[in-house]
Length: 605
Image 1: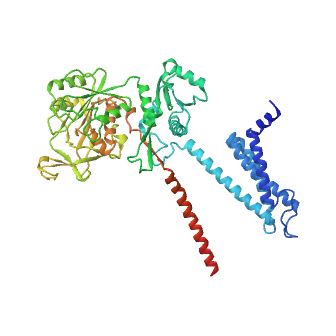
Image 2: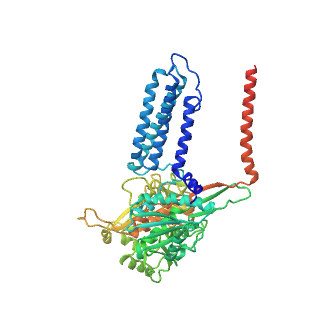
């Protein structure tokens, strides 16, 4: 290495940059405090009262030294740690306090010393205030628990579903963020990094976050691609989720295209805003759930009796496609089957939703056999037509009563026959509805649920209400008579139970029994329909998914759906960009010219 290379290497080091900044800062501060550059005479002071020039030069140098000491202490604290900076701060504050004490008697006689005292006082006050704020924030983040997220879309917090998964990890997890090059990619990487930091903060002893740039580290990228062949075929980057260690580790690749969805404006020619949705939390949590489960639990939907299709996704038409997509997003597999045959092998939950035809006794017998062998069942039926399940539900201790549930007080779009059921916050809410407290569930065509008392089989089960309608609701005994109108003599007042769960009744001798959920009954046949979900959002889906997760004995899957973050980006053509620049500029110039003319005219008068 030649002399020139050594000089460039020395100048490129961090120490050289810091030393250069200190020298330049010292000269500028000394000039400002003394009133003249080094080597030139300073401004004249009043004779007889002001101290001699040598004393003023010494105080200016000491003040400069103390102020630079505060900046040096801040640099040491950031670079090496707070304990190492205490001595530097103590020395700097000591010098500044000494100069303040020495200059107090000259504060009325010397303008330069008065200026030094004011700068010193302001600098020390600012440094102390900054130190208090920084220390307070460090203590708050260290010992203050979870930070409060005040962002509009809660970008700095995770959903309860994700938190449950992270706190229930039984194997170490590594998130490897790999990406390419390009301006758009780097913007996506920053957002994913932010999300992964939230994941790591929830379980720092179990989660490791790694970053790989294949262009900067091709050897490591090649080794990882040999372990995960799909890595080399993933365009645009993504996140490799590794669950476990060694040869037993399971891996899933979540692509950037799975985490970012661009929404094109309806009229690109006239709209100037494009929206990009970030689906990272939903995608990564889904991958984590699948890795933890190993095998996807199967949820089987009955067909053959007019039930809506699980493949219909159109939100404007009947169907259960939205529910199927939501189940698959948390690692479940939704299948349809005709109960005239056998229940699909491996199915843990059978869903009977909105049958339009009466289910025959042979099918009911198969459902009974499935439940008797440990299977779980979710039933969503009303009383518009007989479902054929009534005798079987009686065996569980529940039934669908007559009449239609209406609520003039809590009505969707003013329609009393579309009641909204509030979930009041409270410690007594069952686990299925506790995560969605404070929300409204739309229950179209709902019927009252009755608890069957007195039957012999009832003693084996415990029925727990899940949803009760509001106080203004009632059961209309003659819904075919026209618009809802309560008959005080005939119509039963609310609240009315419209969803209930059935568990095995625990032994009276058990102090803290674990209730085994066997059946969930919802008296609104279209509670999970695409059109209902499109009308009220995901609240209804949250209820159904929580019920299915509870039936599978998976409390870690009970929670809210991961959110969709939307970033709005301005898309402007050359003409619009010119207007955005010129218009504020012209307005600012006009305001300045106007103020100048007003001032001129005022002074002239």
